[in-house]
Image (cartoon, rainbow, N blue to C red; front, side):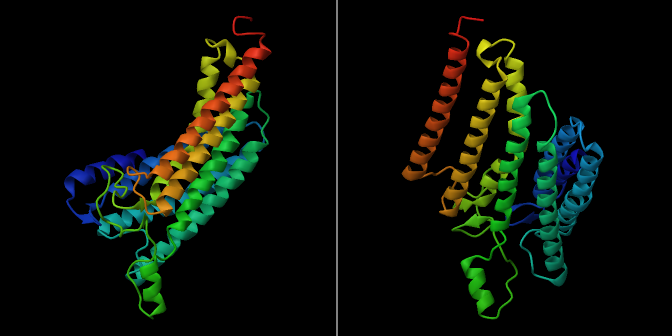
Length: 300
């Protein structure tokens, strides 16, 4: 994935072709980075296991062979052709490739779920990390599932199908506007309407965030007395996990209402404020409980 990301980055400078207003090599670049993070995280998790290691390694290999390789191969192949990879049913070949990616995504979701189940039942002395892994995987699976919402026909596409026509595109990233309009730099998330990719991206990467939070709290425990208790760090990991899930849900709700990411209305901002407030209060409660358990902040 690192090699592919570097190649795709070079392609952006050397190849001037575009698809829906973005360079043909931007999608392979983004997916290579995302899959690189995904696979290295799974490898790290599997490397820390003590039970069922052979089974987990086989599941990891199957995930790469049946999910990552087909997805990235098709995305890269379509970029080289100058064609859209997702939702493109303009020809028999394109339709077959879209269906193959859909099948690979189902396999990837199932394999990630199985890996999470096996990782959940590992013996570990680090309770915060033991909770971070399944919570991160759960939110990541939810984020992965948002991709299926994008495959549903839009209202205009459904009307065309009902009329007996064969539209070139079935499904969309954007809500309320057509794909391919103005977008944010690099990500190209649409700025004219809702974009389901935002919640999809944020949810997916809980897989990296939650373990990093657990590891970071463990490193801080030596300097911050309130974090020395495993129960306190575990509770904080759970709070961050709930907050991450809440942000993912909020972004999905915002996108489904056709609202651009950077143009939230008052209702979205109100819900966001309540979410932030709830997380802050929960963190304060956990730390206050830790302080009481130590007999006060100054007591060892």
